[in-house]
Image (cartoon, rainbow over all chains, first blue to last red; front, side, top):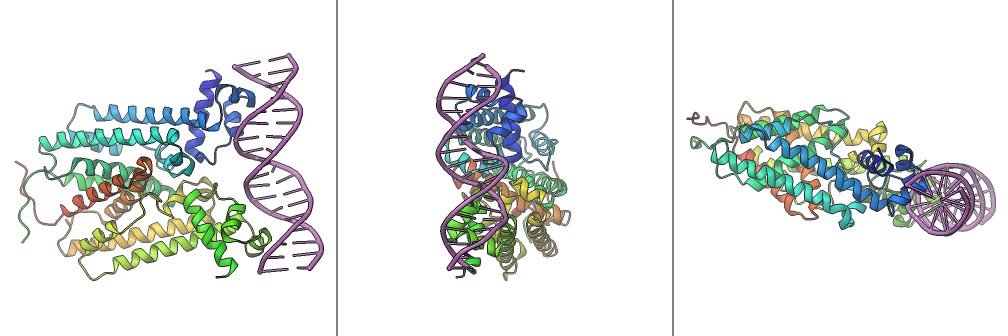
Length: 194
Length: 194
DNA sequence: GTCTATAATTCGATAGAC
DNA sequence: GTCTATCGAATTATAGAC
């Protein structure tokens, strides 16, 4: 693997572990086994390297979700499968994590790939929900975009709970609760209250 | 207000805005209008001051939720009211934000107040859900702890979506979606599928 | 492309005067 | 309690040899 590639992958890892503020050029160089001059030859500065790393992570994460969304089963099953996908609860989300960095939020170059990934995931989940509504798996009154945002939020927030407790348990509880709520939403008319 | 107090409040703000790694002693001193010697007189080091600030934030946030949970209306209404409470979507959660800092997760002193706050919120929400189940607002099959975790996760994750888009909109969508899912959960027997 | 040298600045803290 | 001076290390580069 060439140096440029190793630098990007090291930056991806460090952004995941320590965020933009906590990632020093020195640490990137050490992890990539690259010298200082080498890093500044391939990238203009820390922000440029971070940008390349963020674009890469956002693409990888979206691609893996896209595959999950395209499986040959019911829309509800695909959503449940997305929620159940093996995730390293304590490490958190490589991309969601970046939203906590003020430098990333303030710099449109750095924020844009993050925004784009979440927008595309929302869009993908909303389409699945519409599909599920047509199949009678979800109530037609359900707002697809709202529900898609809720699903994404549960996953992102579940990471927060897991790290707070230093345990994967609250992550899995939050996911289980969300699946249970979604499964209760079939389009069949409910008996009237009282 | 005395210096010690100003130091704690400044640290609370900086932890919210920039996290532990991004908060320098110098920045705390400047914001508190305190000298260097002053800060190191009141607190042994950066971690000790951060600890005091985190304990304070966790207490404040829990206290405000506790009041919300004790209002004189139905359990469902109190949960909805908690979800709808005015939040500064783009600033994120003062306490949840800290879970992204590896230094905070690694140091039990710093992580404990965060863990405790989320544990107590989960407990409080789970109790509300049990109360709602007794009142017929929620299905008895619903797992109170799972659902409580889901509710907390939606809020924490909604902040992530908002910051990613640099807009409060996805925050409110995620909350609206969650409320819609919860309101569909009355204990009334649903008509059988088909 | 990669290396070493250098530099200005900041970080997190200590020392000691007042 | 607060202040200034100082410290060694790290940060984020730039310069220029190879």
